[in-house]
Image (cartoon, rainbow, N blue to C red; front, side, top):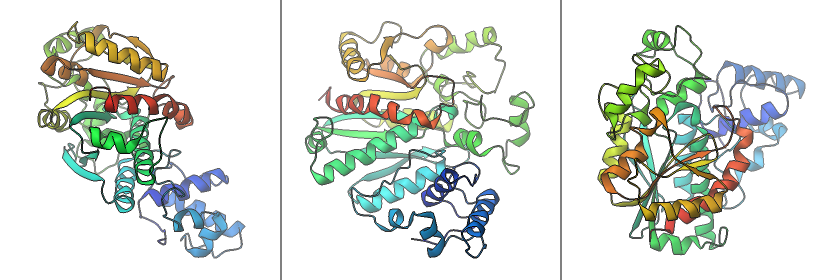
Length: 383
């Protein structure tokens, strides 16, 4: 258990922030960053408990907060690593990946590329089987709850695999031998940090971002693009020109919060990394997780085929999500569109939750319950 103080980052900071918030001390965003608001909340808590109000979280403050045991006991099955009640920033993601590696040394972790601002695009691999599948999340900044979904699934799968227990009737050890499950939980880390942490003065695109955002510094409710104002899920080479031609009808003239498809396909390092990662593997099925709508998009311009329809029907049955097809500008240049066109294999966009993005983290239990069985089935259905 490390001592926490100003400027530190990590999932343990997010746990602290979540606990302070639940006690009414309002530490600011639950983002895993120990800033001044978190420090002031700690000081207020310490004063109320008769502790030295130094803003540093040591053993006495941990004990008063009641989170000592949670952080001290890393044994499998008793301490959750992935916090599903936090703003899931890139720093929280990195901390969770590191903790998962410590607990499960056999977990394969790699980097598929880097974002515009140099953040790693991590992937995790579960299993060693011949059936390769690929799940990714958070192409869009406001849809970071999909990262939480994939990370929690990873943790629960690893825990069950280690213990030799089943999940919803599935045997993770059998899946491990049947499939290789590749997971890229956060495709757009720069955009997510912009949405959750706000625009920082040292951002190299500071002035441009304000201009692209209609002279507003508030990105928390509307910004779906990457840090260069390109919608990553409109940046793939699948009818990309049709997406570009449709932009004026939607009032899109250049970089902005959403739907700008970029200057050319795969112009962005994030979309290029996902495409390159796909080209380097032999995926039999892919799913891109988005929010919202509780719907599964399964086709692309009639190219998907009978197998995709049959799989989509089973995914719909297990999740309760409706099946649909995209219309308008949403029909072009997405990741699953590109995958279907290039490989003629099943590719899906799964829209989790309901409401206005960003979805409240309070929806997470239902989202996870709806999608855990879908993820397990998708892991083996093409084996």
